[in-house]
Length: 307
Image (tube, rainbow, N blue to C red; front, top):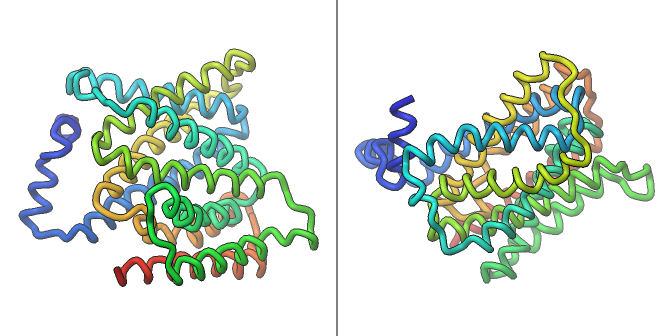
């Protein structure tokens, strides 16, 4: 535990970073390692979230997720000194966290409605939305590769959802809404990290979202009916923290539109997880649609690598 606290306290001058420098680990590899942490945490949160929402509604899951998160972060903030949380970007934090809160709520709600593989496949359009938003918010150039990637990604969504051929499910719409919200969050996080540390950004995210969800919880409060739900809630709380911390550190190293490329393996692994735990099937439309979305992301990555 002491090593973890030391790492957090000296985040921008940590022993781990010294070791990375000593071993001559490139920024690309360091990004990959942080994204592997994000990848593992998201798999844990997907499984734990599905199990927890079988007993409690999404609003209560979000409440306990934030409460557990702040219970972990507060002692660390006290140890570091609350002066480390000073920021002149508080309004921007609130806006960013509002987008993320809506996206996370939509993601957990979609988790209760559609198969895991379908949810994650639609979620991967986040990178397509990120490319679009970055053009307007960060002033990124709209390139030929980005245009092709956006078109291919949208075709992938249409193949999965098939509007006009089958009824569009609410879970699919919530999954798409979460992808757009996450894209806004990623782009704004990149801006926040220019001045604030990953820990500061994470602390304000959990803190402001606890305020948001506490208001909702006042109107509908429900404790878990089974003691078996509590380990899943704790797993969600921990996984949410580690996922966002790893993502924030990766964003400090690489461009917002490229940092999640290692996450591609989550699609087939989540499909296996859904089949293994919940007997969820995978049809040809999901396979083709997911393939198109990932292909669009690869086109975007290839374009970024040429810069």
